[in-house]
Image (tube, one colour):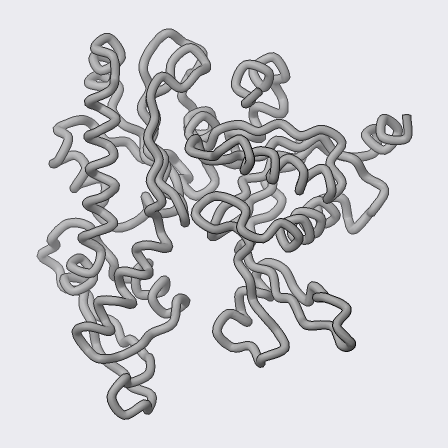
Length: 344
């Protein structure tokens, strides 16, 4: 009964719990929060465990810059929960932030998860949300939410193909009649691209760069296809030979080489999903094309390369970064659709 009363004073929420970023959509308000999925925790004195210092942007500023007593943790690894307690603390922070720090709220929550998630991982997500203050938890698969957010009619008897490139995973799915007909997920996304850049710079320049520097260079000059216009950028790190700070100038051609492996994995996953698609739905995809969503799809010329490799029309949603959260938000307003697309 208390839960029902608390539910009257809380807004239902849709949460895109991503490896790199968490986005929160509140019913009736729209997108209210987009922050990095990072939590800074400090060791308590006298062995009393850990205390949460910061969540989101504040915590991300601390990555790679903390003393021994403080850790900046990313509790979601490759699309699934790696640290149960810290994920719960992060969810509690986002739920309370959506309700102006009020602790007496019990919202209904829709959480987006990768299609490759196991039953144990589903239970971990559900229990984390319930412990953080949710009244009721629904899980929906990220490609389904992405398709709804991108404006596709998922309930129609036609094939829609979605490629969702996130921070930890890339999910490729063919959707028809409010269900996923065929899908593939790989643990490759924006993080693996950053890792590719770090390893390339280490091999070529004997220099170690941090995750944030690798992400910045990927966003500014990273590309998937050869370009005529050369772009360059300074990259700062630590020289591995003599141990002192070092600056090198890199360009988009080098970054394309650094990103070859993760991009090849994504293209191969698209091909394998197309091979397993029923002929009638494959015919629809020829007409309707492939929809790109997710922050990783913003990589320069990735759509051009996919078009060359698949010979199919490639579309990018209006806002790839928020498509999954917007789709989950739309489902909040349509309970019959929520019951159709939610994972049992």
